[in-house]
Amino acid sequence: MLILLSPAKTLDYETQPQTDLKTAPIFHERAAQLIEVLKTKTPADIAALMELSDALSQLNVARYQSWVPNPQPAMYPTGIKQAVLAFDGDVYDGLQARKMSEADLLWMHKHLRILSGLYGILRPLDLMQPHRLEMGTKLKTAVAKDLYNFWRSTITPTLADMAKDAVVHTGSPAAIVNLASEEYFGAVDAKALATQLPVITCVFEEARGRGEFKVISFNAKKARGQMARFAVLNRITDPQQLKTFAEDGYAFAPTASMSTRWVFRRS
Image (cartoon, rainbow, N blue to C red; front, top):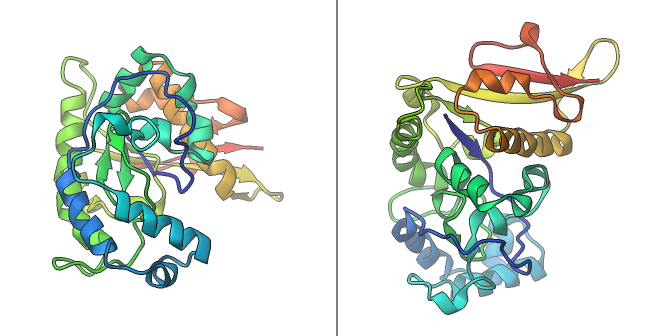
């Protein structure tokens, strides 16, 4: 089983990581191609492209300019850090990776992937430089009109291979559990992926009166992180075991679910 998460806009490069375990992103060279395009942009260009304030656009232009293709050890951890420990925000508040042991982080490194606009796919312990590049950004390159087209043909077969590798010696079925947002999962060719292995999307809803249930974005993001944490701490490799998830009052709702869309609800 391979779990997918989205990245976060907020980054934390101040908190000291609890481990020195680290790896290199597998698509670092393709990320460098995107950075070269971003380095040609002015703060005004970035502000218009990403709908950012002047301050945020200037911050990210500075980040692109300081991004290096061959990070040096001296940059760690303030200029480069493990992805799962660098991302902050709702999903990562639920995941609480900074409270995990090295054994937990190593298990997560094998069974969880973070989709990224810049890096394509990040493993939890992959070293990541500070940046902001959401998957929905319409950044044109020499080979694609946007990031979806830049990454889709690379991400899709790689995830299939990773999901199959993750279950070697476990006896569990190869599957992908999608806990990423629609924006990021849109970079995956879901139909092509589903021909190779099950792809299960988990949805988190809340009661809103008269028998109605809705997805509340803030709470759903945190729940995605909580489910990922539940899988890590319990070493879950069979997706069926995720149906026992009961954090913060959520429960699997079989009548609202389908074979590839599992709904969890709370009142």
